[in-house]
Image (cartoon, rainbow, N blue to C red; front, top):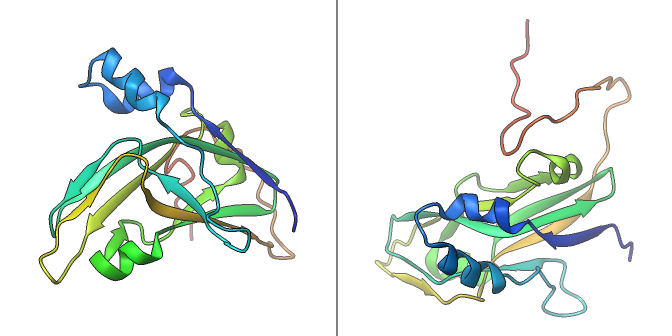
Length: 170
């Protein structure tokens, strides 16, 4: 297997931006418990992302999670993010953007490449989802990609999440 990436924690200053309403002591407590994503077994494709704090989601509720994680990876690779399979099966847990796409240049963005996840409990069975801090909720899979023969893109990322949106002139 190719080794093409490395997970890192974002700086405390960057993480703190996601917890503006909390005391600094509480943010330090949450930040110190951040675990880097890991594979559950040697044959697992996905790297599990862990909750920095516990959550409770009733059916239909949505929450934004600041993971405190960033990823440095080689060009021509992308990290795709999905809900953990069991949570999707049991609770219909959904990522609000269906599949998260983390590009290699996101690591160098203004927000340090801080990966956030917005998830919804889409349960049809009226089940409340309760997860404790440190539990896996999302998985990331590295995928190599190609580009078209006539691709001439030279734009450089200048922002954080959603900063590469552009309108095509016709």
